[in-house]
Picture 1 (spheres, rainbow, N blue to C red):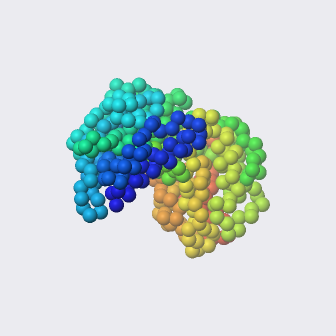
Picture 2: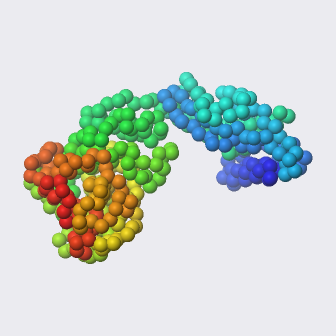
Picture 3: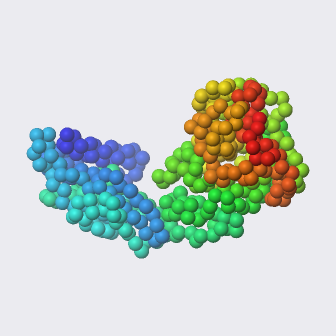
Length: 402
């Protein structure tokens, strides 16, 4: 079994060399493949690869953890290789290809010394990528130079803490990007309920909705932190940093700008679920495109859960992948207490922390970025079980309706 693992490592190196050669790139440095084959045959092999290799960037620093390999035994229990140490080497112009090809950070001879307590590499240059190779070696001096033992990282300065409301556009961008890089935790910077004024560009009639909206300043509110599931993991992060929602309703200086749940007054919503709703198309296109450019560059696609249709026993519907979305009934109210809602938290997501009271659910028409005082209904994405053409909404007093 151990001999097979060693052969796999060898074949990976050969395969990479061939790929590089086909791309007319400099192949993996000259390796004595004949010697490696002889080692495989005679049992003179290097230790296995490290495992659980993780790198976390910091301010002018990198932190590295890994698990060293166990000693290697043949199928009959004969000791083939004794792990003696692991050397960590870095360069800034490509991965080190041997223990002497770069700057030696550490020669660790204590097994698993950095399994839980990270190796800290300090005094590095921010925004420079460092290429790191780990070379395990045996008590007979044979090194494992397999490309599986490589990782890279880029140190970055940790952004200063500034309020969400008053941060510059660049500061907002830097803080969110630092969160996704693993430099900070967004919850140490901002809170649920924090607000920020943003300018929304005018919205012409777009695909999915037969309506227009004027350009307007809007107060956006953080309704959740690390709440929504990202479609694509970012450096180990599986949750969106923040979830924003308009604190008020789209309005023309405090006057109503009505919008239909199905995008027009001629509904074709019968027995349909949110995945088929033209409002989704409008939100992910026209609405997202109205946001400031720096916000658009930060918006991530998340996965939203939905119930199947308008029946009294709907079951789970298809998940949707959205950049902008209507909240569901449980995301707004938590428990399923409204008589015309037959879904569940498991089927449509968990309540956003911001919406823990009716007073926070009340919205009125936007007037230059503040509430006009004209409270009104607004749509949720949950179908109502009352009628196949009905959808749930939040009433002007913050309660559920349809």
